[in-house]
Amino acid sequence: MTVELEALVWVAVLTLFMWLPYVFARIINFGLITVLRYQADDKPLPSWVERAKNAHNNSIENLIPFATLVIVASLANISNDATVSAAIAYFWLRLVHYILHILGISFLRTIAFAGGWLAQLCIAYQILAI
Image (cartoon, rainbow, N blue to C red):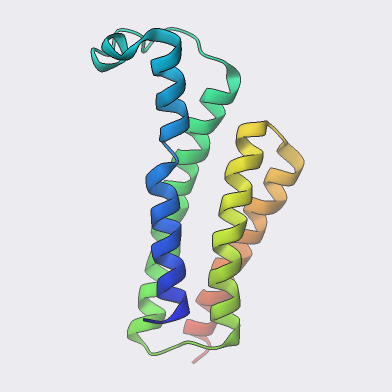
């Protein structure tokens, strides 16, 4: 397996666990049965919980193009220092973006997001430049 595909797996695993903080917060605030019955859906929660949910949604939205690019690069046998570095950077930038989003640190979060976007563009360029 290429480093890029391994990075994709790690990004997917990270995304798989991003829902846990906001679900646990709902359970702590409203109780398990209330949450399971969807009876607390309209009740306010601390702002970090909403940010965690938004960060998770953002990660899912960005996983699709990242996965597409990594898979296409793999199918085209494109793996070089640029794609490896971009894939690794993407993972770490998504993790940093998630943490900063939850903490409400907007400026740095935006920089992390832009870095992840640039990492995807780097992989896309390596595919299209052939």
